[in-house]
Length: 169
Image (cartoon, rainbow, N blue to C red):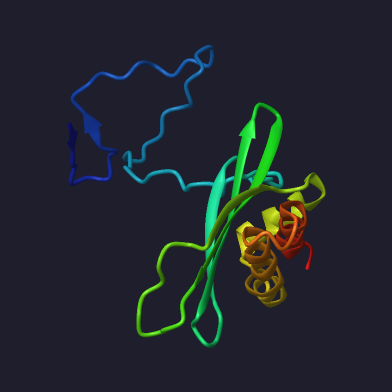
């Protein structure tokens, strides 16, 4: 407990104080009353450059033609198995004649494993979205080729390559 004095004497406490010995590791006693002001916080050291790695992600981009008769859902999915990274395109094509009615079930629904050379492009598209050229390719040539493959007019491998080419544009 601190008591105040009306004279110019330093304040006294009810606790006895130990004599100031230079052999102890305590700072010398002062005649100033203790304050409860916290120490000023120091700014944290700037961390080294942090590199983030997406381990797993799944995104879908819904693309519609201007006439609203065709919709492509272009999905990208990243997964890891140990040290192996796997990117897949989840591709769905929906079409309709009457825009006043909802789309029915997809005409085409396929998963395509992305070529390893296109992994950086898949990562960028998953983070930043598809570019206008990529969107146009997905809803145009990729959708056309997937529909042709479904109808037996094109080899499925060729259609899958056209769909992967969306990431290369």
